[in-house]
Length: 125
Image 1: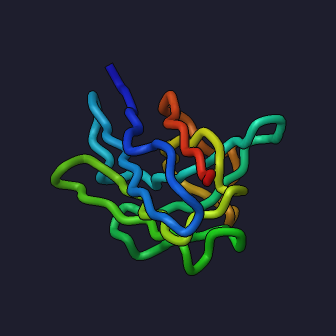
Image 2 (image 1 turned 45 degrees about the vertical axis):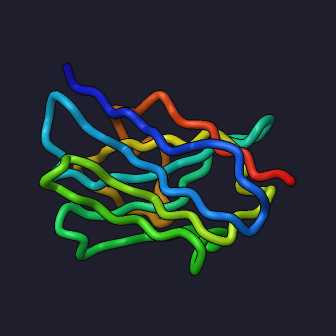
């Protein structure tokens, strides 16, 4: 069964860091573009970053540029989102998703299939 599982979320103080993981099972991530999205309470889901299969193509939304970095380890079938200098406005549920191809940066939900269940990130003092 094809599955994506996010982990690594939690409560962190402003200025702190977290690393999220997205592990795939039932299929290999090697040939897919992997994106991270987030959804804050009362807001629409927004795309924040993606990485191509060979890491040759990366994308980050303006809101996270210079603070978040996406990477992947195909041997572990896992994609990571390193989040630094976290702000309260980064609070939300973070999801990973896969696509065979994308045409937008930041990523758009409608281009992605096979979503994970999400992991909660809360930035608060």
